[in-house]
Length: 392
Ligand code: 3PG
Image 1 (tube, rainbow, N blue to C red):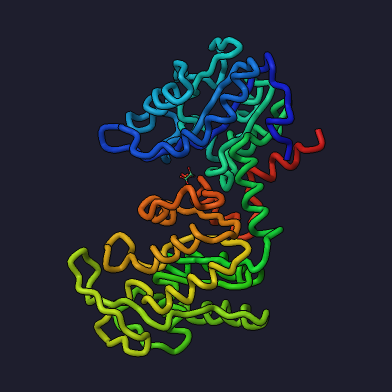
Image 2 (image 1 turned 180 degrees about the horizontal axis):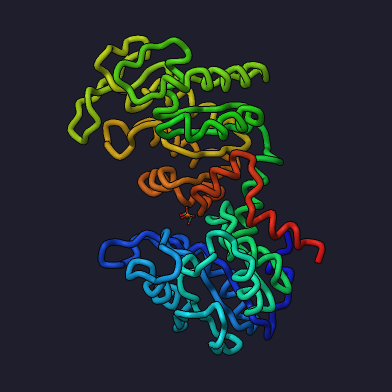
């Protein structure tokens, strides 16, 4: 794709699609601003060159046609202004133009998903938005899996279409990890369900040297391996699929290392009494809520010898201290590894924050669904739209 940093945007009108979809509390205060911070380099780059900068994003999943009280980007405009150290005007009705911006000024265009036709990638809407700018910049990696008017259609009609600095960094890091990895390539896929990550598991099984599974996913794999898992969270209907994933790994001379010991309790709660037991000793009332120390040590060793690490999903219920040991050990092994590591997904980011290893991970993706779809090997529509304009 064409990159913003290869362009001269001096005196140009630049339209930046960012992903500023950040969590807020009930009073509308932003509770986590990573995505706003991550959007700053591209905006600052354009401002420094003297461009007139329009930024937009979606917030939530609003009804098209109105901007409800929970839909407005007003709090984001304030935060953006603080980070850029310049006031950021919020423009309410912007699709038909009619607002002024000076070179070196930045404005925020109200929640783009409130415009009729945004989600369906309406061509008329995309053309109108393209007419607002000289250069279209897509910096919204977190929304790259959506083909909407601001992420996809506009890229066809804008005079120039390129990737912003965040988009570029995400594409580079993910491509490096998945398509040009230093070997061994180790993937850790945790989380509750095989069904939601089946494509990822199958795609990774074709690529990686070690596939570590955790959480409810590992429980389904244990079932497939003929183990008893008591009352643990699992999907018995996915056992065949889990077996297929193990078979793919086996056909490539590798395996899916399953836990040899586990941490069990009879309920998931902060007060639950945890027991560490060999995986063969799980009784009918037990729930497996973490991997045990022997398993953690074995997996940490695999991680220590990795050339590249891809991490999505915790291996235990790390929100509770007595079930956090496995995920903590993984996090620490990744932090101490010399390998290039990439991590993404909401729970993974929460684990990274909890165990305070953000500074030691090679790249932390801002994408949730987009990160997962990239791991699935899918072509993300927003990236494809930029690629289509590469030769222009
Ligand atoms: C996200 O939070 O994953 C992105 O901002 C995409 O949001 P969406 O799932 O509402 O498209």
